[in-house]
Structure formats: C-alpha cells, structure tokens
Length: 155
Image 1 (tube, rainbow, N blue to C red):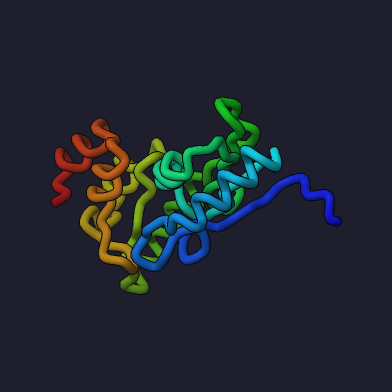
Image 2 (cartoon, rainbow, N blue to C red; image 1 turned 60 degrees about the vertical axis):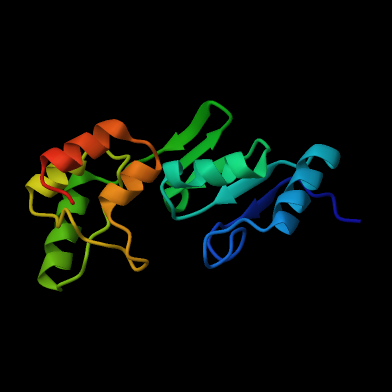
C-alpha cells in the first residue's frame, strides 16, 4: 500500500469539466480523501487565486492553493510563498503581445492592473473562452477592481 502524503489536482478539465462544472463524483471523492483518509488536498493551477476559491468552496473541504503556476502558495490563512511577476517583465510581455496582435488577459488580483492598462494593455481583451478582465473581476466580487476597470473604460 502506498503511503500518500498529499493529493494535487489541476482545475480545468481535470477537477472541473470543460464547461467549468464540478462533477458530484469528483466532489465526493475529494471529500472522502480529505475527511476520511485525512490526506491533504491541493489545487495546483495556472489560474489566479481568486478563481480557485469558488472551486474550493464548492468542494466543501480545506485545500492548499498553489496558483499562478507555483508563484503563490497558501495553506489555510498562511501564505507560504508569494512571488509576483516583476513589473518590468510584465511590461516587456505586453509590448511583445501587442506587436504580435495577441489579446492580453490581465490578472485582476495584481496591483498593476491600472498600470498595465495605462501602459497600453487592451482593457477589453478576452481570453480563449471569451471572458474579459471585467467579467473575471465581477465573478470574483472584486468591487474595487470592477470600479477601477469601469473608470478606465472597460465594458
């Protein structure tokens, strides 16, 4: 028998379906592992932390959050690791993506949302699923970011 110390799962098309639904079977399995087997569960994702919180809430168990492809790790209320992207790197990426005609999906939790937009990021760009930064901010109830985005002209 394997002595399991931790179970990790991605979110998209792993824990949730393509249409972003959490199957009851997955919820029950995670709860059983955490509550009956006492094995910690971690969500490991490229998503921003605000977008994994509803998944954790729907699971109904405590889960470790590993977001931004490992640049943010939180267990309970304790932040174990937090390394945001360097602002200069973000600016370079934005210049490159603009030149290449690519859409930018800004992270509504960073402190640089306004700065990115003021530096020329497309405030109304949409991700591959058609979601805008404003829609993400609204879905996560980030009122201060929604207000800032609207003030800057997002629609």
